[in-house]
Length: 161
Image 1 (cartoon, helix red, strand yellow):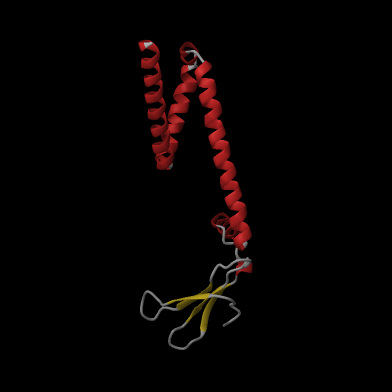
Image 2 (cartoon, rainbow, N blue to C red):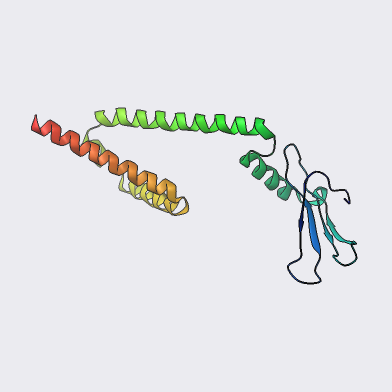
């Protein structure tokens, strides 16, 4: 249909007398998505938007979204994203492990020597980022609460012995 290929999406007009839109759907291994506007009464193509005419930034955005969603290169794309996700999980867990081991050896006095400006900046950054990414903030608070509880239990246990 008018140079469109593969799966297409046909959307009726929002207002009477407006054109119908017909666009290529995003599919695996397909780097271009063209679209046309069709007059519903005459069936004539009244407008056309070819992917080749898109600005480079728009093309890159579309491709990166598809790549990020795992739809650009099919199962291969999804496999690579899965490996990256597992790698990130391993790095995160190893980071927590290193922090946990090191934390036991640091004296409380060393934490007090942290520069106030650096500490304040870190807290402001973490609060701002937590507003933009609430799940990060929730998990950070949960981690800090859990750490405080474990530290409190360990302190009480060592005092009772």
